[in-house]
Image 1 (cartoon, rainbow, N blue to C red):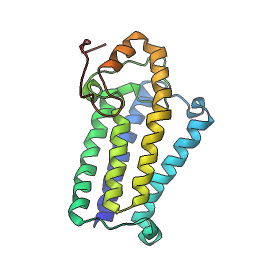
Image 2: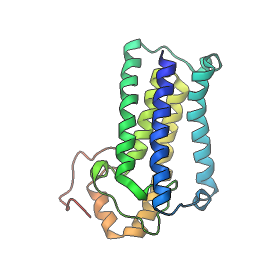
Image 3: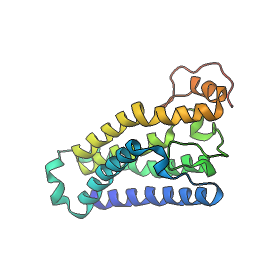
Image 4: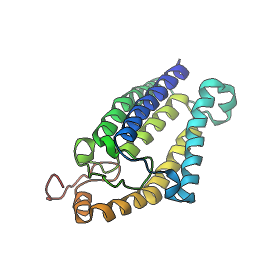
Length: 201
């Protein structure tokens, strides 16, 4: 049962993401991934292969992933299922808020806008937060320590490598406006203590 629920949640999230990304490509420019450089390209490919590959194998050939399984109580798996289902509208909210600013890279578009509404009012990178939450939920549903470990590795790489590159590009684009925005928002979770800076930049 959880296998098919995992598949439904993953396909729903991919469909919602694909729709908004296609819409952004029609409304704005597309930045080619190779402009990020080989290091980020390789890291993204390895993470995607690890996370998506493990989940797809679990759904299609669960016997191939038994080495990565651990016992998870059914009630905990159901909590993971609820969280996983909730990430689908969260993906829609984040990408709809971004609109044509959706990018496949850490780089900014020529007509990129600084979005500070919706989930971006509290978090600078809610799409990363939503993606990590999705795979943690799927890992719990699947009872896969490998998926949870890969999600942890993704968090480390995002926090200390990918996000700094992205924020460097945003500061170069928006200058002090982005620096003020950084003071009142968290990277992946809301700040507990917010500054007294204006609400919109």
